[in-house]
Length: 370
Ligand code: FAD
Ligand code: UDP
Image (cartoon, rainbow, N blue to C red; front, side, top):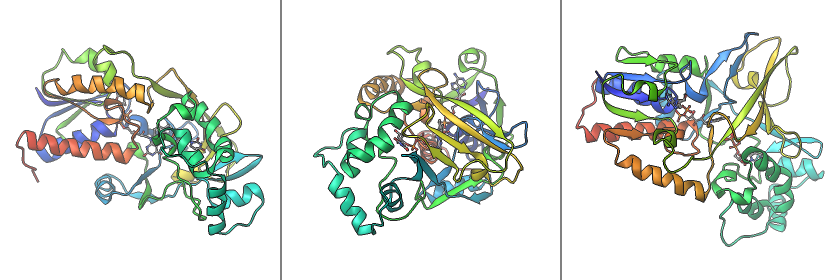
């Protein structure tokens, strides 16, 4: 008899397993249908001995000290600030678009104030910012939108930016200064020994029993538990009764190259050409020294593992029907990127699961054990 059955050993499920086991002395069965823990953050040493991320590049960044400190209980950190270049008009220029980008692209030498004037002169000001096209065109105008965002977004989502919520391209800001970093969060770092190592430490507790290669549907009638926490796709849980929620998937094509370096930054984006969206060279992220280097190309696709919920109104309407059904499901909680159909970064998923932990503690009148 388990207190909790937790479906999904990614961040959402594992954080709850750790909290409930160590702080509420609960007995947990944590399952995943994959053959490893870590969910989409899973990393491993490939046959050449290079640390790679199986499901695409994962860079940890957050503004929350609480979340950074929480993960810090299970890993040492390697400070790392991600830089991305975009291949545009035959040059590699910084993205997010900033002062350096404009000056390199147009052969100019504009000051910060002049860059702001440049954006103002190009921007098509919108009364309402509703779509991912509106966000960019409103900030920098149509030409830069076409060069940096339109085609990348069509590749990534299979949709025109005008068909996607504003929140998608709003993830990438526009800057007038020379800050070439991809993220500006207060805490930016990589787990020193990798994500999988961090997960092993997170889940190393006598109250947590892990079963891999185990699908929830095959197991649920076989075991006894009091409460279910589900971080798989919510539509699958309800047997797609309101139809399938659309997800975007990616084919990751990896390659090891017999040379120490491949590209100047961790990631290079291809917003104008190629079928792939970006190439990442892992050694930039991990700091590993090796005579060879491993890279991954990302080819977005409609079929395959559900990686990205697709933020747009019609999908939220379907999700909201599932959400209402979920609220009336006894002794069951949904969490995570798939369980709540939210385009969340890692820190947001951790925040969501820590909040759910607090809610469960209050609902069950539990006290933290030390
Ligand atoms: P997941 O990691 O997807 O875990 C869910 C788990 O549930 C999976 O392991 C799955 O196998 C399991 N499961 C599903 N159904 C069942 C079932 N029926 N039975 C048993 N198990 C089941 N975030 C960042 O902060 N920084 C980044 O740089 C970053 N880069 C990303 C790059 C890519 C390509 C992708 C796809 C995501 C990226 N993210 C990044 C987001 C990050 O991956 C997620 O926020 C986080 O991993 C989600 O954790 P989760 O536990 O909700 O989901
Ligand atoms: N985007 C783009 N061009 C870029 C980078 C991003 O058009 O060079 C858009 C694209 O729609 C992408 C979104 O902005 O899906 C969010 O980018 P981010 O890098 O945050 O995507 P993720 O790392 O989650 O795949």
